[in-house]
Amino acid sequence: MEASLKGFPEFGLFGQVALVTGAARGLGNAISRALAHVGSDVALGLRDVDAQGDLAAQIEAMGRRALPLQMDMKRLDEIFRAVEDTVKRFGRLDILVNNAGLAPDNLAENVSEADFDLTLAVNLKGTFFASQAAGRVMLRQKSGRIINMSSQAGFVALPTESVYCMTKAAIAHLTKCLAVEWGKYNITVNAVAPTFIHTPGTESYLANPESRSDVVERIAALHRIGDPMDVAGAVVFLASSAASLITGETILIDGGWTAR
Image (cartoon, rainbow, N blue to C red):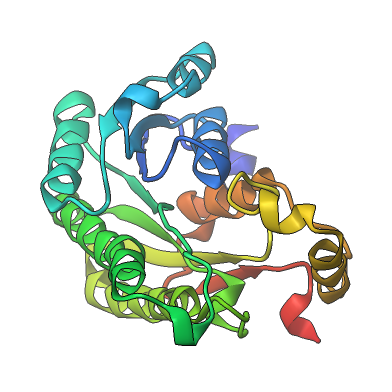
């Protein structure tokens, strides 16, 4: 029986170690729990480790190990220390999910330098240096998976989100660059690009009936707003050996928005 199953795709992550940035809520919370569900131990990158809630307890209840870490993505010292502490605790790092991001909402003519710098610091600079820190570990291991958080906003224009859109388009290209550099070390680098998802970050926007109606209409194929686990499923796939020949790709999770 075992011999007949050899060669089939494997989606489990048993014995592996993941680090998820921005893990406290929304997509990061769902992705952390989904990775644990399929067998991975999870290090939780948190902007404020003292406000972690019960996520670590939920992961441990699944029989996995959890490690809450102080990891403000604006602080390179915290990024590098979080990766070091993950390896120190678990002995390795197999999966990095660069989930942390933000999107100050403003018309382009009103964007302040402070908001511009903050968006780039978290969405781009933080993602790059977290990838660098994890990549150095993965290069030594000669294996690893990096999954970045792009957005449909990197592929279509969203009014009042010019800076955010710019960073998410850049993430898609950074993904290609890292994939090409690190492929020879058996490291894959991919991204996911969600549409509007029910999270604390989109709650106020989607609470507006006109905005919600517009979003549902634009999600052309499915006409529904996604849940965080819709995104987590794609991340789990890209982290698994079933996706071992996929690298440099950005998978749109947009319900058909960009198919129009």
